[in-house]
Image (cartoon, rainbow, N blue to C red; front, side):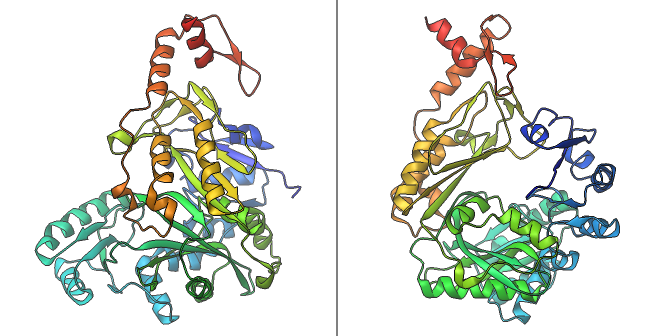
Length: 469
């Protein structure tokens, strides 16, 4: 677009690729998110110091913070995202439910007001009918969430969820939603301008989840009728207009076995899984967001948008799938991406960098496109098998097990899929052995190999190869 970019980075991220990719970079002293990327005034100061005109908040940290948007407005900085009021409506799960009900958008039966006491929770749970989900009003990422099968389990679940919500968000208030058994999680990408015009970029299937967090996404959704798809997309646009939305947003739905769908929430930012939509619909969502934030009228026409082919994304985490997906921070002694046609890799790491304990352990996304779903699935499997990751435990064997599971291959799966996926019995022996050997050899090897930036650092695989010879 011809726009110069400024990166901000913490102490931990001083060698991260995004710092070198940008035209300019500003250091935010500190390691913890609260000291750096979550410090609104530091981000504002970096913006002013570099005379940047706009901020793109990405999909983490301050991306859904209405106060940050307000501060940008006060300083005359363009925020590439929705207005603060839309964030407040959709960020408050109960206010969002109330707004959707008023707009005629179907919502999951349950609370419409905060529940601060056990008595209020019990009353709403009885109205919705067991089983129910307890959720934190200020929550996200599965924190403060409990499944309650019957009333006798309600009190301990309420107490545990309230404690967790207070610890995570500083707010113990909860609400009730009817538990939809084995639903599908399907979301719709929308784009809206400042003048009330909008389009949808169709749907994404996000039902492969662990601990209520997405791991694999695909588009189009499989075994979903055209009638339901079209209706869901139109309802998503209605939801956006009801909230006074601008820019890119995602409306999330739960879909039951009869294709009844219910509004779940709206993410007021770009999604981690946006690349699959870009590959199938052919719209660069980040560019579209920027143009809309700069005041352009909607430049896309709904009748000219369509889905071509199929795309699937896997999220690569530094975590141990054999230990309940426990994070596995550490130094990437070896990191090699696949280089294949129709495969896109979005990552933020390089060989010899550290995957930090301070941030989410997501280190890469790999996306494959195909003329049809099976071609995309096979390409994605090939791409995952081409990755070389040494130094941390990772979830690639788990992802391969999911992609090859008969239910995933067949399509039409639901959010309970991972309960039936069995991990390969053998651990990631190659990676573990390589990491162990490198740990023994570090500091004693003379052999060097150039890394991505042309400097010389020990190569794990060359060191191992030398020892084998």
